[in-house]
Picture 1 (cartoon, rainbow, N blue to C red):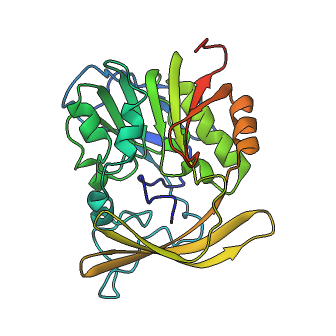
Picture 2: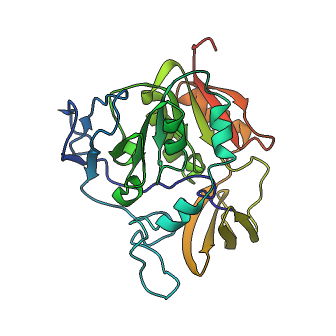
Picture 3: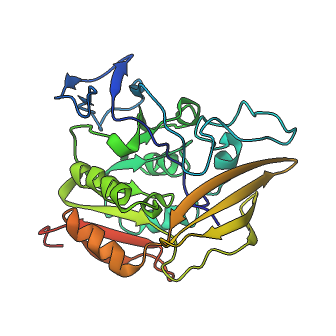
Length: 295
């Protein structure tokens, strides 16, 4: 089991950004950490608009990995692996359910949805087909090439600032299981900056009672093997996940932490949220609502 079994991926990147290509109302903000960031006014009602590019000037390695790809079935670097090590074919093969059902359960009528780390549109595509106004954010242009019906933003989710608020923000793929608390807070602050006052955030985490041990399972057509698990004294763990799709396989190391209920409540309170309902029996899918929303 890995942070990306039921979602897409992320990449650590510098907060320094540049805007390339077509943008909608891009305005420079004061520099952060010596870089230049931009607020992009996205028309979420539009369809098939050009991809908005927010390209970081520097990439930092993914925890536990090389940050430059992973070994494919032939032992060489696979051209269909994103720069952060995420295999495109794996994410295209992952089924939408049950994740799609969890998301649909909190949608009551047409909504504007921000999908952080959308990958190739496993959820963004069917949600857009449902009639919702979806903005898919990812740091891989190859992944976004497979998004259909939604607007796309090529950017780092950890430093995202679109200058627009949405009815629903999706922070899935176990992004909240970052090993460092500062990174978990950073993620939820991005969510808070992009969710409307009466909106909600759906967070996917490892089940709070889950213990990382070597295991094998299947997610749709993807065979998943979690192995080389190492528990750290600070409560985090490192592991390697091997994916197999037909006759091909990829390995991806990662580091994460199980976020228990008390820690999630603390993260939520610190970033202006209250913890709402859970959407599954294991407590992995949780709704966060802005403090004072009255819902």
